[in-house]
Length: 241
Image 1 (cartoon, one colour):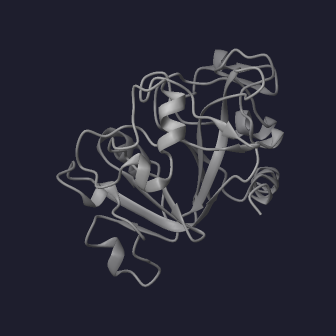
Image 2 (cartoon, helix red, strand yellow; image 1 turned 135 degrees about the vertical axis):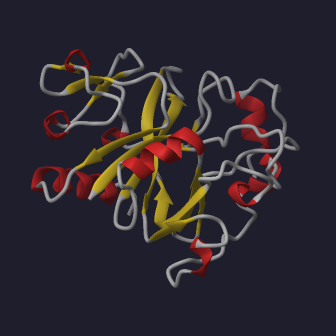
């Protein structure tokens, strides 16, 4: 089994600000899109939130990249280019788990931090026109951006059970209290098993902290049958029940 820490949603570059936490629930704002999308922020009921978070730079009628797409206890996620090449080289596929994380702002203090906001267990994956023919596939309830327009040749869709977080639980926060942003609290087994893009020993601070990479979308850890890692993952997924 592999765990993929997958960076998604607004950040200082894509969107230009953190996503909000509303009434105790993290709401990941999809990044803006110029094309290859049929979905506006208003279609997702995010018009007021995106206008407020971006201070009016982005409006409800602007297109967004609705990915990962969550609905009805399922998740649809598309990837391509170098990031998909990395997932393919790592062998990511059926039975593996994506933990989607992003940049959020604390509603009381404004502190920026990374936190996990969603997950998906992969039941099937493949190129558009291929994955949806598999028996595990269900059609997305709205147009998925990776079905829109032209993408790289390795354009790939992942589908499986998945949900977004109902609360900003401390267990889903990655950034250590007080920061800095990319200093994460991590379980000890992660340093033992390793994480792609984090091979340099100096990134691992003590036994429970990681200086996470500031760039990159998909960080993969192959946990195999490691019981400590599997127990940690089960506890994280319980936060979504």
